[in-house]
Length: 291
Image (cartoon, rainbow, N blue to C red; front, side):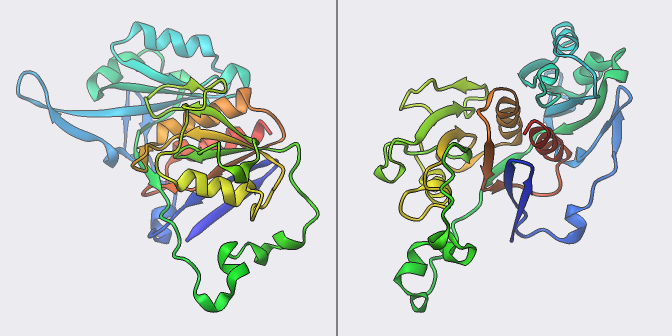
């Protein structure tokens, strides 16, 4: 089952397939690191250390409290042993986070003395695409089958085309040269290397090697059957060609859209993972607040 969240001018599609009501409830902090609450601690991993002991290792998403600046964030993670690979831009209205790569002990050392700056910690988690829905049965008729049921929301009869709207497709990328996009699809961002890469129009950037992202882009803004047939489509690759990735990539993409994205903006995410991640909820709230 999918949940569509429509707030302000930002739409986010978040999969909750296979989850129970209990899975969706907010999780209480299971422990603290340097006094900062940790949610979803069970997503961490244990691995051997150099001396034969076992350490708790993770790629941590550390979220700041309101009012903490970009400079303060950078200051903490340039002094401590944890290395940061992705970070948000809260001073500019972006997502207040940093992705830290280290074991639990080093994270504690990094955060000690700065507890008042941080809201919560959450281990990074794997995300994957939402599998394609099986094709409708033949008795739907040719038109209904081809449009995947979009006639049910009035697409064939609407006079609204989405012209001037920017739709950011956070997925496996987009094959932007597809004729159905009529040169309205733009390579924009690629995060599958673990950093934010701006495409600057490079057709090889954020290219879809899976098909899922192109399918989603066609549903959102393709000429033949799209909901917004004249909208500008932005390829934001947060899933590999195998259809997987890290939630931190999506959080960083939402930060970029909040700070640098064109408006009016819509974000489409046909992806998901297990449980209720506080980091994604926070990132969505920030992006919505940014318009």
